[in-house]
Length: 406
Image 1: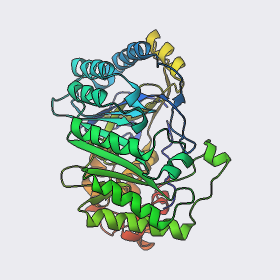
Image 2 (image 1 turned 60 degrees about the vertical axis):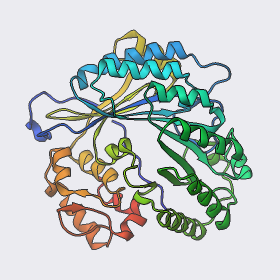
Image 3 (image 1 turned 135 degrees about the horizontal axis):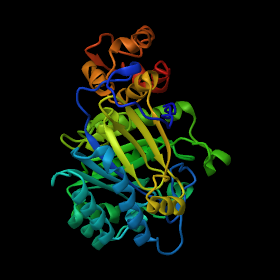
Image 4 (image 1 turned 120 degrees about the vertical axis):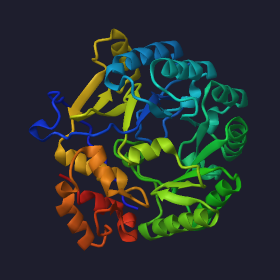
């Protein structure tokens, strides 16, 4: 599977009047999610290009919580009164936070935003930092979904990936998570350094044996500015990687999982609502260092990015001047068409054509030439009622997405 295109991170605001200068006019605002970034980890994995920072000793939890509150309070005018559908704690390693800290954050969100009692609240956890009491504390605080970064059940592969846990710790963490919450996701990677097809299959079979409701099955890619990019390990060739990808899908589907997104597999009713909101071009408020936001207004859609370095973000957020937001831009027509398709085409069933109009304020005619080219190449299903990749287009998703670049 080819590497996916990254969304360019944006700057500038509209003039407050709907529809002027070709800006979109939205009949209704999309669902809103909240993303909370926890930047610290015990060890930076060599494949990781996320905004994560190694820290020895205790993390500055109290300073972080104060800055997070300041960040949220400054963002409130942009989302005031809007209901929040999901919350996601990502990282870094959110499971480095104490249960009390997570409780305070969720309490803050409930006090300042319209967060329903039954909203999906996910917390990512590293098996190397898993503690049964802490997981129970997360659940009592309101977390109802835990996503575990397993990556592999093979100790040799885990060492090659630089993970801080071993296979037995992974198995123990899964059991802890399943006792704490009803909904558990396992992250697993394939096409690992020197991995064979049999080893890949064994990893997937073991993951399936835990009977969780969701699996995220990723192809390892060498991202820029990582240790693996500088010192590439020996990876399976393209033919073997493709065979692994096909076998992963076969095994998960045979076990009753629906591959509803390129890397996401769910049992009925277990799809990740937070990620679905991303892929359906919903809105999200990102708080924390390096967090990104996409916020819609009646007449414009903006993207924001926070300061990446934890200490700088904490200092700037507490100042209350807005300087912790280091990038802001309004999306133009070309950006909107590309970013919508970049996300929606990841879904196996695609989306209804009307959703494009609803979420962008644009007509499908604005991307019709690109759609025609993609149909002619056999990458996109014909018709405007549903925007959906063909099986070939889904397999070569990067090629299909590139058709919509402005």
